[in-house]
Length: 458
Image 1 (cartoon, one colour):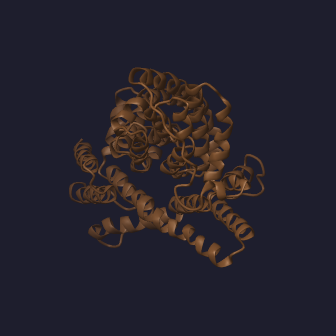
Image 2 (cartoon, rainbow, N blue to C red):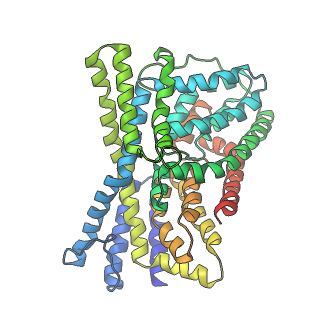
Image 3 (cartoon, helix red, strand yellow):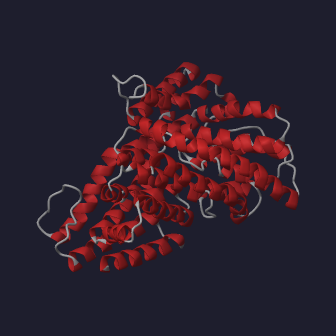
């Protein structure tokens, strides 16, 4: 009981500091170190070693060796996947491939004369594009400069169009997404299997529900508040080459890693296996080759490829560091006994794994809403899923899948999320107005996701 109380107090303090815009990495790291330190003092018989690591000889130093072991493990595993995916995405953006893909995909929607139907279909298309464009903010910026002007010119208000774009990354789907890769690793399966066999069956339930509610809620809010006008601006990428200057076939380049991962997996060609990192590197080199063939300026093209390496460092600083600090925090909660006591209490009360899955999922969603980061929310709690699943005698996927999907969903109703703030500027309204419009579709999508997970994996 004492361990649970300490865990709740430390968690509450950490959440409060993050909500007040304290650096989340440092907050989670210090919170984890405090939990490990209190475990040594209050529960000296409990192990604070990282996985199968051996003691350095004194428990005081073991606490910091724990951080080192987590750092080395995460960088060599999921961290490398995240860094390679971010590097590939930024390079595709730099050469104009991502913007070209978005421009081509939204072109057919211009021929539909029903504005709110286009709005709903735009969400579906954006959610599918998120599979190839793992950055929620990156996808939103591309849609803001390509799709947003068309929507507003059709009579849809700026807040409605902005809110829809803010929802396009509602679910983090696909093998290129960092949280999906971590979920697959936690569940002990390839990213391609996790995407096809587990994410897609749930997504086919959620996407129609969210799309339909976007249609009705947007129309309701627009009729209540009136609509505006907007002069369409030429489509340009947020950075790098303008999308109109990139060759049309560049639209296929962002899909290369996804195709490789899905084709060379147990799903199709099972005698060849290509992991996500290999696919990202290969996709980037193919992009480099295309740039050499098109530009024919080796010096300029080689210099441009430096974006790939710069992004690796940026991803480590912003995401992988968060993963390590969240891992220390989560392991600290386990070491002090908070997680074990909570699991035993739920089991003794007669509740099953499905109730525990909902509780953990709601915790992730609340964290995502408070912090504005789906990555921070999922990374903070994902390490607990295997322990909980094992104690309940079920597969880790039962816990991991709803937690991973809920992380992105919580971000969609967070007024402090980067993507919500970005679209609110385009919508010429406050982030709270955007959240007011995304709230109903998001909550319905969350409920649908939990129901689908219960029916499929419960």
